[in-house]
Length: 271
Image (cartoon, rainbow, N blue to C red; front, side, top):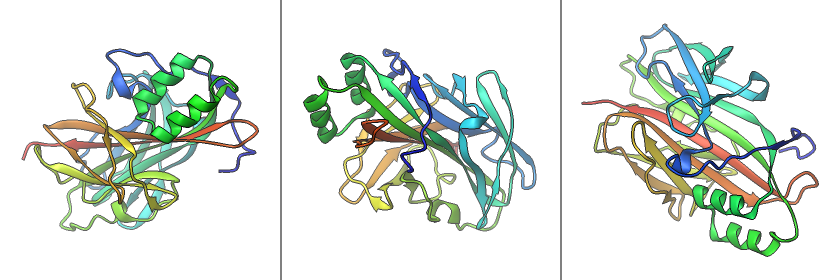
């Protein structure tokens, strides 16, 4: 990231604790159908909230760095429409087979003034022991100022005889990412989704990853293994959000911490 290009400082109280659990500050992307007809219009909703998938607050269009829909080896831009009832609306067209929509947000800076709020934050995201130790060593000497970026992705499938899933294995330019190792649109209740966590294109071990199924509280955080792999059980039908935050110390004039948030959404249907 170009550290000279950052948004103005934003004072944010992210941490409304309690029943909201670890999904309190996630931003997700959902299509109006995970199984559209080929060639049909698609509407996508993007929102940040405390209770997935209920809308919380809408992302403003000026925060978008990239919004695209990839399928069959090609990618087209999503068309931003409007803000309505806590969501940002975008549109695309369903292509044959598997499609992957993604929205990358521009970096912003936040301040967290209270030590107890920082502690809640680190607990919620499952921060590494190295992060905890670094913060404990410096917490009485500097204010928490964090540059954070967000990436939201979703997967859908229109009818097709083609079974290849190119858009889940295609190279991406995201610094921090969670990539499915299989087609996430072809899973049934009781199966698990295999994922690989990457940072700067390399497998990332020990990363905390969460999952929440609509209508249920978030599961306990899981951590990626030595080669960045982990499995997420899909216990029933419905929409799921998989989420993670990679946080690390930073040495910049504008901020002393840096993070990347990633969410994936999928739908699991009855066989």
